[in-house]
Every structure is written in C-alpha cells, then in structure tokens.
Amino acid sequence: MPFLDLPDKTSNNMTSYLMLTGVMMLWSLGIIVAKGVYESVNPIGFSFLRWVVAAFLLTPVLIPQLRSQWHFMQSRLWYLLLLGLFMAGGSTMLMFAVQHTTATNAALFSASQPIVTVFMAWVFLRDKPSRIQILGMLAALGGIFAMATRLDLEVLQSLTFNPGDLLVLLAVLFYSLYSINLHRWLSGVRPFLMMLVTIYAGILILFPFYAWELLALGQFEMTPEVLWAIFFMAIIPTIVATTMWNISVGRVGAKQASIFLNLLPLFGIGLAVSFLGETLHHYHLVGALLICTGITAVVWPSSE
Image (cartoon, rainbow, N blue to C red; front, side, top):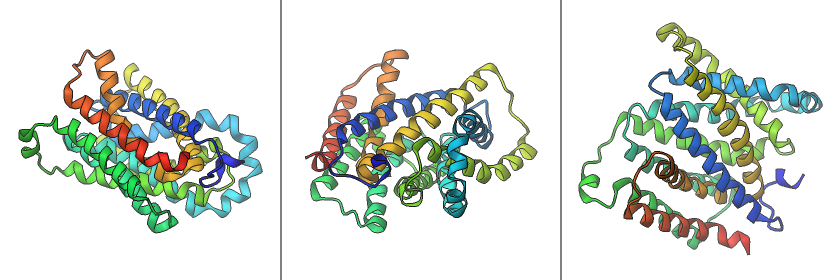
C-alpha cells in the first residue's frame, strides 16, 4: 500500500499535511486532559493503563491481521521492543517532566524535536534538508520562543534549568527515534496493526516500572475523572492521532512531519482562549506567524 512506503514524491501530500494538522489538534486536547489529572495520578501507572486500554480496544478488531502477519512480527521482535520503548518511554517521561519543570521550559525544549528529527533523518536516512527548510525550522523555533518568553526580556533572563528539562529532551530524542525508524523497521504493516504491535511492545517495556511504582507508591485512586482521562488518552491521542501520525510519516517522511509538532502550542493557546477564557496577546500572533511561515518553508519543496 502506498502510504506504508517512505516518502513518495508523486503522492498527494496535501492530504497528509491536513492529517498532521488534525493530529496536532488531537494531541493538544490530550495534553490538556493529562494536565487536568496529573496531580491525581502516578505518571508510569497512568501511561501504562492508557496503553493497556488502547490494546484492549484494538485487539478484537485486528486479530485477523495479527494472525496473518504473526511470523513477520516475530522476526521483528527486537525492533518492536525498541519502538515500544521509544513511544511509551517518551510519553511517560513527559508525564514526569511536567511535574519538575515550568511550562515555558517545557515548550522551549519540546520545540527542538523537529530539529532533532531532521538531524537524525540526515544521519540515518541520508535525507539532507535544504537551506530553506533549515531556515523554516529556525523560524518555527523562533515562534515557540516568542510565545514562551512573551517577548519579554525579564522572562528570558529568569529562565533556569530544571530537572524536568532533561526528561523533556530525552522524550524528544525518543519520539524522534520512533518517527524515523517506524517505517524502516515495520515496512509493509498496516497502520492500525502497526499501532497495536507497538502498543504491545510499550506495555512490555513499561510493566516492570509499573510494578515498581505500585510497590513504592500504591495504586492511585480511580475517580470518574481519572477513568475518563485514561479512556480519552487511549482512544483519541493514542489510537486515532498516533495512527494518523504513522500514516503521515509514511507518506511525507519524518522530516516534513516533525515540523508540524510546532503547531501544538498554537492549538493549546486556541483551546485555552476558546474554552478557558484566556486572553490572546500580541506575542501569540507573532509566534503563530513565525510557526506557520516555518512550516510552509519546510513542506513547500515537497509539494511542488
């Protein structure tokens, strides 16, 4: 199937770019939901149960596909475990990170992911970025910087390095490794099945850490809000959005796809203004302009 191959210059990339935009909106919703309960849950346990619920929902539907490609999956066992580590590990580290750093630092360090992904794609896939794409990434990074610092020198001067910042950077590294290797290691696997087997691998990786957390901290209380958040995170950001991400990366490549990650704060701001009554400021508009300009510069060469 064409969307399972590495970037195809003849494909209709515009559909993938619209899909990536939708992914960022859904992941932004997930961030808001996770923030609403993170003080009531243990990070590893929350992530583990999210993956378990996602696997429980997907498995009955995908059993025929799983049986037909079982031998292929067995031959890719170590690759699957690594992908599970990158995906589940990255999301868990972000859950830890938000408890040990500021929102400004998290936004700034997370914004490095497109650059990290492009560098890795250059090293491992020999996919060298053009000059205009590099400038586009820097423009998008500048947009994140403008919003995170509010274009205020005092905010910039007050920035300090927190323990959670290292976790954000590790999560960025893990997500980048996941994106550039997914279709190298699981080429030919259907998108939802690709999602399911990666979830299985993530559950295996997280289980010993979840067991340790249970012994050390006990099980967090399963309030209706926490249960709702677990199911929401399992269905929307995990099954739906991540499958859309996998399909899009297969079509346009990790380099073009990663720049869309800088839309996350834009959607976050839009949701906060629309539903939480927060105020839109001039630095939001400056940041939005720089981010959109940067994304256009990165994807434009591949859409010609």
